[in-house]
Length: 329
Ligand code: GTR
Image (tube, rainbow, N blue to C red; front, side, top):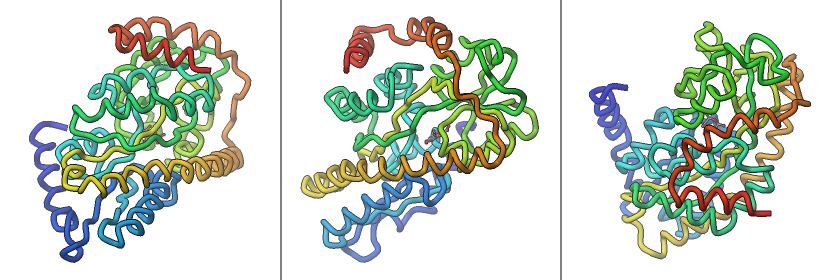
């Protein structure tokens, strides 16, 4: 997006949201939360649940309205709007934060986590807290982490059974340089683009595929145009719920505590919903005739990531984080 279009979009969004931002009645504050996913998706439902908790605990003074289905824009743009305070809350993947909050690069590295359990142990502990705190200098308050499963490649052309099969195929990645280098290091060609453009780009042959987890592969309907899914699980990127620092500072310390606690409590709910949705999505996608390659030797993929680590894990802070994540049992 050009600067001019971005500014225009920001003004348009601010105008659209003005009024909704604050007063339903003189006392009520309605926080607007953005999500790229459709209604019913685990992240959307988890933030709604958090909203119920907040409403209950503030006797109806503060509520949350979730704008799902990318109604407020694509992730990269909504992050900027959240920094500006035009959007109050935002549920996003850590990937699009990579070029803003350096620490998020570490958890976006391919194969940094050995399993979902490993990711939970790290993000639920002091390392997770440290990364949440790293958002604040960038005008954002990190509230909680949600699950994003494991991301794997899918494409319209052929089953991928080894790294060789990725050669020459063009894959969409989230807008972060790490993912571009990741795909290139595996022998494919990477094209960063917003999530909302992926379906038509595969359909029209601009790209051959993309990569994502089961629920997103299903809910985005990408499986209709990409019939080959290989569970190489190259990324386990946590998702994060952030609040605009501007909106945060309008709340009293007591209300901040209520919001933070409710966000943390919504995590358990999210994980339950996520597990159920993963199973449902897998079933739906398999029934739609997608060919799934499950047994793939991941070692060559892991080995190929060495240059990506070398390029991004450059300073002492990031080296230390990587070492501590790897040492977490
Ligand atoms: C999903 C994630 C979204 C978005 C999307 C994408 O798994 O939940 O936040 O990042 O992937 O690929 O753009």
